[in-house]
Amino acid sequence: MSHFNACVLVRRNGSNTEQLAQKANEMFANFDINKEVKPYKHYIEADEIQRMAKHYGIDLKNLPALAEKLEDWDGDKGSVDEAGLYGTSTKNPVGHTDYWSVFAEVKLEDRGRLLFGQGGEEKTVKAFVTPDGQYVDGPWVYGAPNAEQEKELKAWDKKITALLDEYKDAAVFLVDCHI
Picture 1 (cartoon, rainbow, N blue to C red):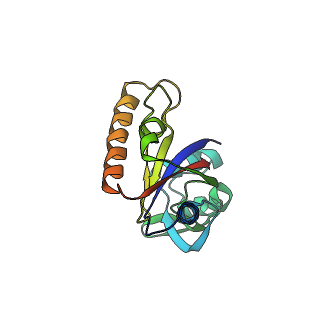
Picture 2: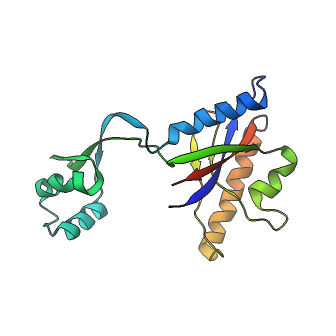
Picture 3: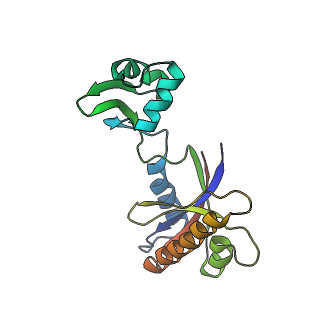
C-alpha cells in the first residue's frame, strides 16, 4: 500500500477556510474505494482473463468456468453473455483511495514549492480533483525518474499549470491519501 498527495480545488463562494476544507473532504469522498454504489456490469479484459485462466488452470475459452471463479478472484459475481465474461459489482468505479485527510490549504505563494517541487523539494501532488468533481490522475514515479517518466512528469507539470490557471479563483487543498 502507498501514500500519495492530491489537491482538491474548491470554489470559494464566500466560504471561510473551515467550510472550504469540509467541502474538499466531501468532494474527495466520491473517490473512496470502499463506497458502495448501485450494482453495475463490467466486462473483464482479455489480459485479466488470461491471468485468471492461468491461476485457476482453466482453459481461457471456458468463460462459464471462469465466471464461477470471478467472485473468488475479485469479489464480483461473474456471468457470461454474448459480449463476454463480466462481473456485477457494487465497488466504486471511480475509487482511488481507501483513506484520505484534507490537511492544508495551499496559499498562492507556496504553490511552486508544494506542487512543482521548486526549491529542491520533491513534487507532492499525484492527482487533482477539479471544482466540478473530475479526478485528474498524474503519473506514479518512485525514486529517480527514467527518461519516459521525465516526459510524463513534464506533461503533468503542464497539466497542473493549466488546472491552476483554469481555476485560479479556487481554494487549493492538499490531501494525504492512502491506497
